[in-house]
Amino acid sequence: TAALGLLWAVLLLLLSVSGLPTEEPTSGEAVASSSPGNCRRCCDSEDPTVLADAAHVSSASPSAFPYVLPEVRPYINITILKGDKGDRGLLGSPGKLGREGPRGDRGPQGIKGAKGQAGSPGSPCQRRFSAFSVGRKTALHSSEGFQPLLFDTVFVNPDGHFDLAAGHFVAPLRGLYFFSLNVHSWNFKETYVHVVHNDKAAVILYAQPSDRSIMQSQSVMLALAPGDHVWARLFKRERENAVYSDDIDTYITFSGHLIKPEDD
Image 1 (cartoon, helix red, strand yellow):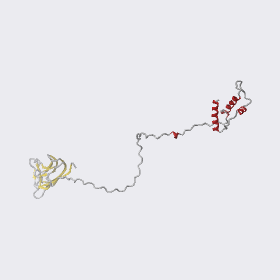
Image 2 (cartoon, rainbow, N blue to C red):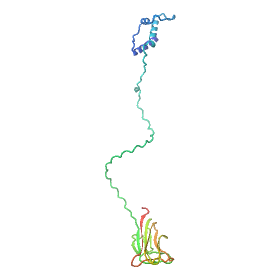
Image 3 (cartoon, rainbow, N blue to C red):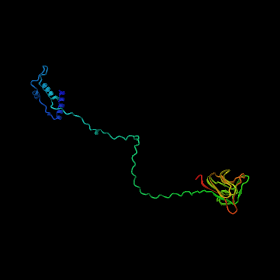
Image 4 (tube, helix red, strand yellow):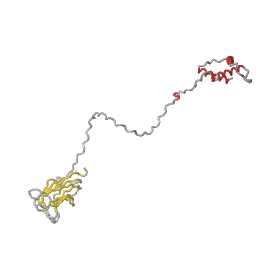
């Protein structure tokens, strides 16, 4: 039948793969190879062709082979299924910063570069200054009120910042100024003089009564604003005090100068 023919084709293919003889036995050989002592049922067919086919089927069963048939596994070459290269994906988010590595060795010193171009000249240095130094050759005794020390000799007053008629220095700009006052005491009298900033006494120059006259000095540094006045005054008569000088030598001097403008 057609089904048996298809079965025979499959069996012959397997036998050719395993190396067994593929020669098809004849019907007579199949009948002869069957054991003469095999039992038959009374309902079996008497047709020798049917008996021969049954004998061939029985002899081709797996139990009749002397070894196990090899397992056939298909192999697919994946490379022939590879498609075209896809587009590049989106850039992922940056990862965490790694640990800092050890510091490397110092590299060799590079070659000295060429000398650069000279820069443009800077603005001229603005130097601002103020200074004065004056003296007095006349003695002065105390009176009922305070007396300003007026000066009759000018040593230095280049910009006229010291008002000789009033005995006042007038600050031209805001900054730090230094002042120095020197006087000669009178025998048996006190010496009591103030250095005044505007209307307030800043420092005092004082000497007790003595049978000897000596030189006394006082100095101070003041922060002044433009238009501030600095001057010296003798204390009033409630204390008998005086300063000494004569027409020959200058015993009384008052000096000052700008140290640093505020905006420098």
